[in-house]
Image (tube, rainbow, N blue to C red; front, side, top):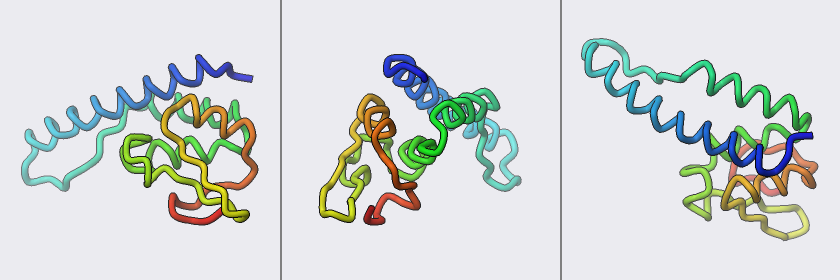
Length: 116
């Protein structure tokens, strides 16, 4: 099993690369102003995410949810709230809390507003 510090370091690396990919995509779009606005994604970023998801098994959908579907990946706390069926709320503020939640969670996310 991947350790908590390694998981946090990898998530932070994916986030840093996502920012750089946005900058690179902006430059590519500026060079080709008549093209469709595309999204640039470094293959290594996708491979790291795939490896994390494989390592964590069935709970892996939470990683993609937190990185891509929860706006600002932990910065906008209301968008990172998981509502449980029993009324509890879980707020995922950072990669460490995401790791802790994945280790104990059972439901699969469909979006950040769904009740679990």
